[in-house]
Length: 299
Picture 1: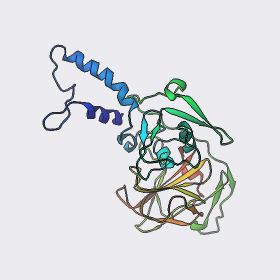
Picture 2: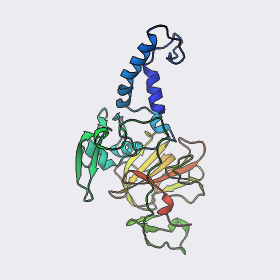
Picture 3: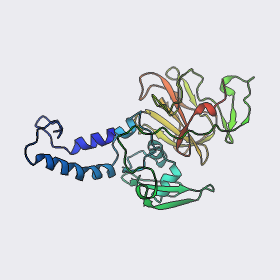
């Protein structure tokens, strides 16, 4: 909703001071009331189908996935980072825009968000020929009501118990055929939450320069600072279903396309994009945030 309000202000006439003129604050005379009403009816569909604004993914209350509008690729972005921003599965978003593996995109390319792709269990994609608005019960535009919390994922099955005799930094736990370990040994200062103050992962306290380690083996699919609210961010792809992210780093020590091993140091902890040194850690399954506590070994 914030994105809609900001976009609306951008097209309103402005006073000499530069402030937008609000139709609610003016006292229209005669036919001006009907003029503003007509203008609103014309502008609303345009605004809802245009580019999404930055407020959309700065808003902690709003939760993706996003199925309206479009996104213009900026320098340094990858399909993985864009899918992460809008809460979409990178395979589904790629399929919706007819982008095949290895999912290469280029600066200036326009990605449609109002079309939904599909991903079969075998990994084969099928593209939906109609916009989501006409083929899905999901709304094509944000409503004025508070967005619904994301669907609760069932707890994954743990296939191997953690080794409690080994030090914390060496403990692993196998969940969904992936050996997970803690990315940092600090205290958890904020847990995963889908209500109240939404947190799509966990926040771990630490000192600037502390080592940030890969929670599992995988391939670095994004390393940069293009996602607002995440600071210097690393996204690691573990398999076709799972990604993990490491945010607010002081320094990134790996490059996109690099294979990393579980426990490998991939960054230095920092406070980029936040108010204090911390590691913000997320795990996403098929594009949706899941509680890392169900995957990391118990402390």
